[in-house]
Length: 491
Ligand code: HEM
Image 1 (cartoon, helix red, strand yellow):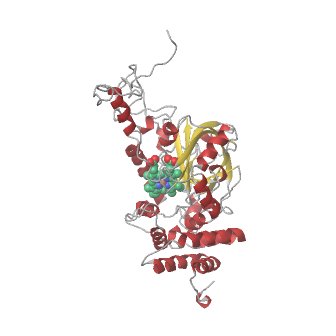
Image 2 (tube, rainbow, N blue to C red; image 1 turned 180 degrees about the horizontal axis):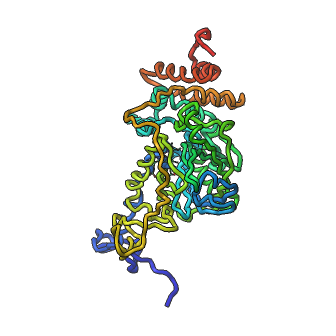
Image 3 (tube, rainbow, N blue to C red; image 1 turned 135 degrees about the vertical axis):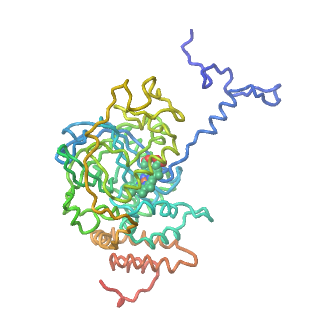
């Protein structure tokens, strides 16, 4: 018998002709009975799944997380249980606003999502390359994202929408400043930091809780494009960062990132100058120094992009015992949003796909649904409680009881309007070159504002730049050709 493989239909029956359709006569019409023609065309028509509504363009790799420092005084999460412990993980990098075919060198935050396959369940840390975000309430997210996408009339990206929204939402200023600096165009995914951005909780074996922020610092060093270099790269190679990641892993030049945490006690959270759960603010590194935790090494390219990267599904709701949420209103909104997006984008059984599946135990009574391909629980009971299996609730995983600060129900805007101190502090520590590049990038971006409201939008945004820092405001005003009377300015 020949050892050659035969071409088959999806049902496994041999195909006797792969390229010629069955026809009536040499030049005649085709026959319905050539089912393989139908199967091929029909399967092809269904090759695409919806792209992610945000972060559509991305690149991914598997890796290993190794604990280098003991943080068991803060957390009982098994992933951190001992120095030297290794956990398999998957990372997906992305840009935010563009479509799946958009360029890697766009000025945009970069997504930096981590999935750790821990023995206590999958832990997802779905972060960005910036420590803060544009808005501080999840309810604002869809409108904010609409401004980053295409204008409904022109179907083009619109600087007018972008700056109109930002200028009307000055809580965005900190993130916008970072975005407009050269950190808005990282050279590759290997040359940028990642941040969990939100405050999370950690709970230790004695049920003591602290708040933490996660940082993952590039060990390759930070490298950014200037605006001109990024523009050039978008033309030369829209996939340059994808290409760079695959190549460096293929060449065994494995990208590494040092995982660190900042820790804030519950008492400190009460007296923090701002709301410690406001994701538009950072925690000062002087007051809350970075503490080493471990090293992430990306060392394996997935063998199939669609199976692993496109179908990967990260969710801030995927936490493990020893790590908890905080009251951050953005984080709370994200708990709902991601798994909902996955059910729409991939289907209800998205978490049974190899890249998303917990390789350790998964025991529950969810059954059936589209594309259930993992055995569906076999003949085991499909209800709880039952008299047949030995699956139990884990009391320890209940976490700890804690009191909330208020029992007043309402819509609160945080009553906190200092959107300027932290962006001002950031601008002040920029080098002269960073200041000049940032101002030039802002001027370039704001120059795209057009239409009847142009002056109103520019003036409103200029006020925000001035309130953060006069040198910044003056630089942007000058670049845009707006004359400012210096006597009106207070330092
Ligand atoms: C992706 C919603 C804020 C980082 C997504 C997706 C949704 C979403 C629906 C697509 C998920 C998918 O189809 O797989 C939201 C909402 C937010 C929010 C409602 C605010 C309330 C943030 C913040 C960060 C972030 C603050 C970073 C700190 C990411 C990343 C991805 C993503 C990295 C891509 C994950 C991947 O690679 O698959 N977001 N997001 N998002 N989001 Fe958010």
